Length: 84
Image 1 (spheres, rainbow, N blue to C red):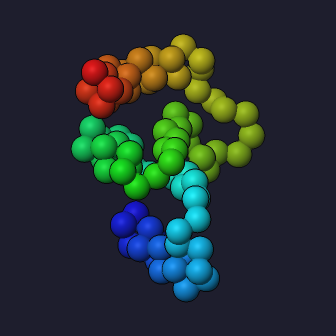
Image 2: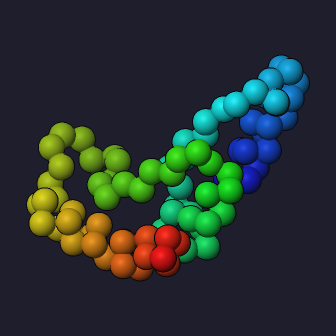
């Protein structure tokens, strides 16, 4: 992610837009750890954490109860430690 953000910074600078506001949204495996989320907080405007495999075509095969359980575990392991 750092390499991509560095490229983006270079492009913005070359285009004379480095001082203009810009939102950066990421989907990153870094969002699976407390340290990763903290790094993303400093680099991105928004980080999405998905609880579905993005490469499955058609309806999501995972039951809603399982999704809720994943979200609860993520909240307990990550969110409560990032935003105590």
